[in-house]
Length: 201
Image (cartoon, rainbow, N blue to C red; front, side, top):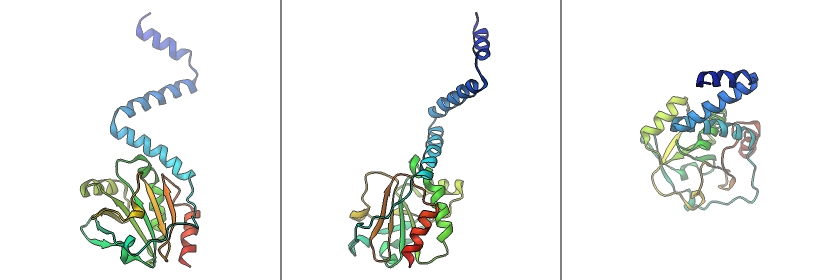
């Protein structure tokens, strides 16, 4: 029996579901060989995780000091800011990278949240990465993201020194970190919107 006959015999004994399952498996293996394929698959998996994982308020969150707010950042157009400019506001900070599948997976949810609050001057969004500007611009333009992106200008203050990304912080108006979440989460859902609306009161 030649190879063609073996394939025909194999397919002839397979159900439609079995054929589809085998095809999906082959495509998955091929995609995993290439970095762009691995990122796409990782992003898709983490997008599902992001829809499930909900952020939770931590009533015992860390109270930031004045020094913790002293963090110089530069946006992708070269404009410099200091985190201390946003004292007294609700601040959403996300530490991420373009090569990080969980970061990529949760970004559509962050974009939804940003779109909801972008016209509210009492809420500030800082998407912070150490990636090169050219790579950042290519990444966000390809996906049509409009949230503000910043690069590190100096080492993060102690509360923002993390071992894993993505890590997301929500700081209330009195400077308390009320949410610190590592991993992808459903930031664009009604729960986070209600949390921020409550913090604004």
